[in-house]
Amino acid sequence: MQEPAQTRILLVDDEPGIRKVLGITLADGGYSVTTAENGEEALRRFREHRPDVVLTDIKMPDMDGIELLQHIKAESPDTEVVMFTGHGDMELAIKSLKHDATDFVTKPINEDVLEIALKRARERIAMRRQLREYTHELERLVEEKARQLVEAERLAAVGQTVSELAHTIKNIANALKGSIFVLGKGIELDEREYLLEGWRMVRDNVEKIKDLSLDLLHYGKYGRVSARPSDPLGPVEAVLRLLAGRAAELGVALSAEPAAGLASVTIDPEAIQRCLLNLVGNAIDACRGRPGARVAVRILPGPSGGIEYQVTDTGCGMDASTCERLFQSFFSTKGTEGTGIGLMMAKRIVDQHAGRILVESRPGEGTTVTVRLPAVSAE
Image (tube, rainbow, N blue to C red; front, side, top):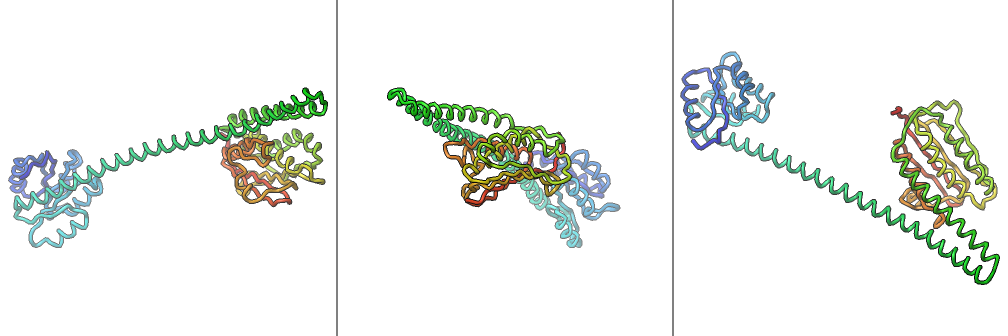
């Protein structure tokens, strides 16, 4: 027999002579052999030694070889089982193959035929081991590549964010440069009108820098929300108080329209207030210069037990392509007047609540932004 690299074998046969002779032959061939005289003993030996290969007679009293095969495969599908059968038991031999036996050898047992069956069993064991190693290596490679991809995407996102933020800062810097030019002209020509215009431009751009800094601070603050049972009307009332002056200055009617019987919901009220502050503030700005403009905040029960906020304005509206880009990094509908961080923050807060933001708008007719928050449990 060829060197079996210490393959462990369980030999099962109810004939002591076969167990003794075949056991010696297998041991001489380099196999590690354990024997059993029946199915019950074989199962006990199998559980103790966990052999690589089981050689078993098909016909045995009490538990036959087919039943033993089924028990072994149920406990250890990877164990190879070779059946011993007589010439008249071919139907049982074929049945054993259907139950995933490796092979069968007819009695009287020929050593060369048995070695061919054992070689096939060893090849299957080696192939299965190699497959496990390949699978493990593939999983390791996939995990490593996934980490590299996530890191690359993170760096790309950081790079894009830095680039877009730099572009925003550059716009403000250019505006400040223009302000300084106008102030310089006013000083050079001793023109009060130039001085006042330059001062107004400087003041407005300093305000933009302040707003940008605060928006960035708030954006970092709401990386994680802290939800708790809250009155869904509270954030809306706070926003309307904060923006009442701006709305009045632009001649925009500002109102809240809560549905009747609203129940407490689990949200982060400060984060939702910040989200609505940006959405309502944008809605008011969209109504600039439109007589009789209105902004309404509706508070409705959500479709699945949560809450829904609808910010509706009668402002300038937006086309479909603008709506699609609305919550992208640093995108603003106000051109150089805005930074886009407010809308990024609003989207982030809604995402942290596992909610959705939906936008419906028509140019010249107005916009409705819906914030839909699901029912959640407090942390």
